Length: 145
Ligand code: CA2
Image (cartoon, rainbow, N blue to C red; front, side):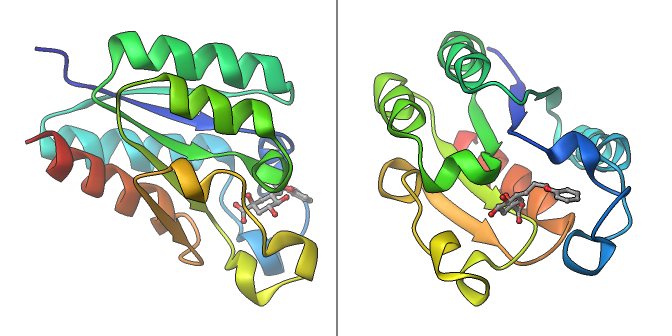
């Protein structure tokens, strides 16, 4: 049985730790990847960790995860507020997807309050900084057990 959780990151998350630490924290995406691998290892899972600034890459990786993973932790970045393509990709795959955000998108600008992912996600975690990632991994591991 596959024991892999995909962690997929959208646009601008490669810039974490370099700008706006007041909103997103001081950790880089590489730091968060290390946290994810450690959390998954403790739960008996492996992590496939990816980031792209390109919507089509994210769609392709969701399809790939549908074949290879027990679930997906997805920080869609700003595409989460706009992308019907990501919405449709999640509908097209048969594994659970947890939408996550570092920041509490509901406490920010109104254009961040809408998510096209939440209606097709298994659940949503936001506002816990880098812990949003490890909480999502814990939830996916519980769903898969
Ligand atoms: O809170 C989150 O995790 C977000 O997905 C982060 C996105 C934002 O568009 C979403 O509304 C919420 C932004 C990704 C990182 O953008 C940066 C901007 C400036 C400096 C560093 C990163």
